[in-house]
Image (tube, rainbow, N blue to C red):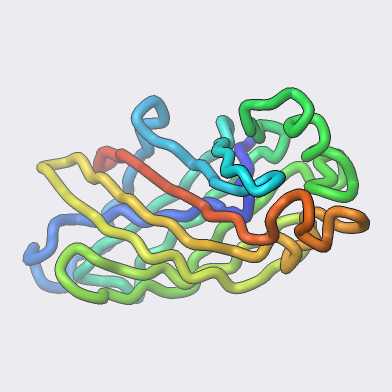
Length: 192
């Protein structure tokens, strides 16, 4: 089963060829090294911060800073791989007031555009779909390339209720905070 993004985003996600390469280079394809990567999140419960991650996810990445218009990333995340380091949190997160994992087993992050900001800094503009709700998410990230290995680090803060995550008594944010910081640390190798 594919991993899911708490919004994920989810957990998106761009890796690139080294800046200053040949003009108009076609976007390179990249393969994520999962054991060196993390699709995580930070949230609050009772005023205390807790961290977690999604263990099961898949990313299709084609990215080049020389051809941002043709670059594209799609990440699919298995919601049931949610791990907030608490048995109670993990089981509660699967119910219909939270992720409704039975009805919506996958979250998807799909890019629409990339922007180069400065130096190694970029933004991915994407659609994040969780629980059947699609909304725009802008994910700032930095990218470093060393030969055929790329490291991408990014994060974005989202309002979980924009995706109907945590409804009913959970919607107020009194117990579990409304803001969730999605954290993406990826290492990938150039395919081929």
